[in-house]
Length: 140
Image (cartoon, rainbow, N blue to C red):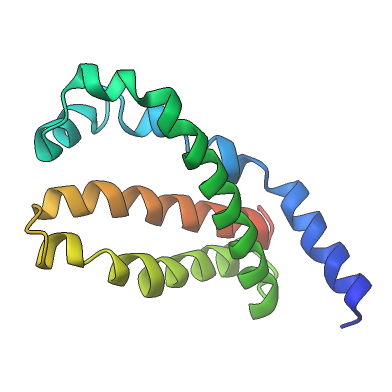
């Protein structure tokens, strides 16, 4: 593929999938009292007040990191030739499995954190990468 066509394809996918950067990665929702906030606080020893106090400071790198992750995933979807939402979601899943799930196992194996902590952190990232991949591959 010619470089201009390649760049245009990736740019189109990034424009089509802005929700992957902001909506699905909203850290406030993931750690809300309705979802995993209380469990996460208990598992990490961070009080709810401490978490709320550092939320804004934590959101800035979270949004930047989410944008970077979405950018890299769009390239992975493009390079694999995924042309529909199911293939895009599969690319997201396998990127999660190979890079996130494996790389974060040390939190349980060596840092001795509970499996519940691993599942909260990684379940969220699995969902985010699969949904971002779905969006980059083409929503149904």
